[in-house]
Length: 20
Image (cartoon, rainbow, N blue to C red; front, side):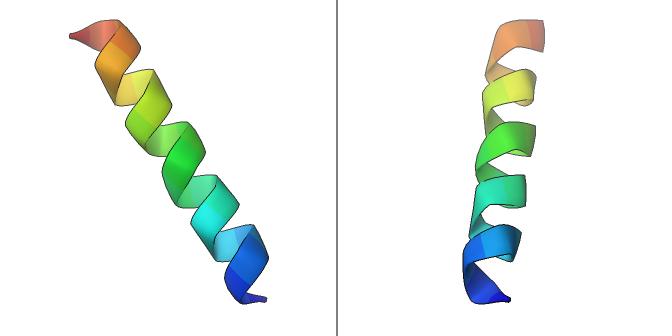
């Protein structure tokens, strides 16, 4: 579903910010 995909992208972006 689109919602699940959007949520997954949000989690990846959030993790990337933590690494940075």
